[in-house]
Image (tube, rainbow, N blue to C red):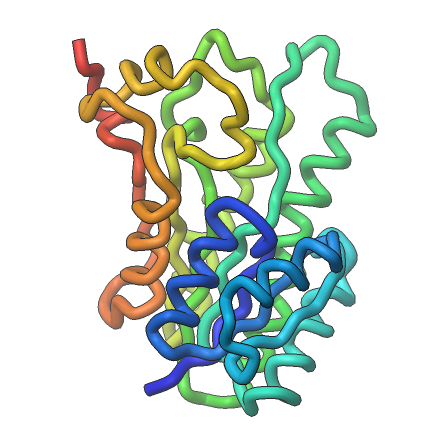
Length: 244
């Protein structure tokens, strides 16, 4: 069955590769990001115009989620899967975090995920055929690093984890499954020019991850009919132990 998938934050990194994989297997995908030019370039690179729709907008604005759903239904007739990938991350010592900093993370990560999911769930409930929500969190919720002071970002991502388990319970009767992928250190634009060797040593597998590996988890959770409320770490063993 061909599915219609909304992927937020699909102009780079985990979101872009997830979108690529859904398109490659024949699904319809609604791409979303804040930069219209970057989104257009991604759409061109995927080379499947009949399977794609594009909407540029900030998910921190509640109407963006509604517009994504409207576009998906207008173009493809339905929605089946939402991948809540859009978000921001950065480090700053706790005592230096300003109200503006905290609001930025809460809006971009938690509020954006919340209201985009709300718009999609309304459509899924109207369709009465179930569906799947896949959120992107982080293993740093469960295993923080002393050298990475990121309390503001992690408070917002912790909320995404809590939303995942809460909605899994609330929406199970509708056949809507809600899970999350919790990446470890992954080679994305957010990793930038970080020390790959030092970062890799933090995981049992002694390396950093690739976006193809988070994509595999996203695809699994999108399809896994008997899995809900699960926070799926893709971290090379980061939260389980150390390579040495």
